[in-house]
Image (cartoon, rainbow, N blue to C red; front, side):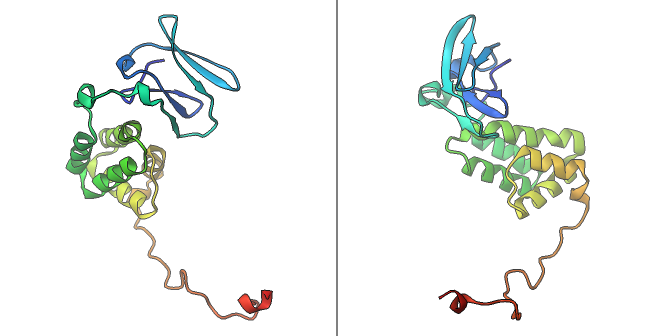
Length: 180
């Protein structure tokens, strides 16, 4: 397995950090029910407590670059500019993904995956899928891919019902006084 540009490796849907200098390098994972160890050329370079939280990151601060000079090629600003070339909704989704993460680098994988969907589905469909994802507050590559795969980007989004969030008087509603 190779370390991604965000210097994390994936095991069972969870992402574990490695020293950023190992981005793109071939690594070996060894894991138990409690720990995850990462090896480079038979030397242990990282050890983490294992997590069952899918789609989350475990990041050791020492694995991050001191200055982000090594990552100037891939920065949140560059990815956001790329998203804007697809459309404003794509940019909004990418910005939301970065905002949801404690470290912007943890959003690189999802954002780049979403942007690569433009090659397969085209920019207009991706923009429509991102608009739908933004509307329902979906914040992952899988959500956007599913919208595209099922053609939901081609279907008008349902209008919110005028009754949404409005309490309707009904005989079976007891109200707060009933529970006192």
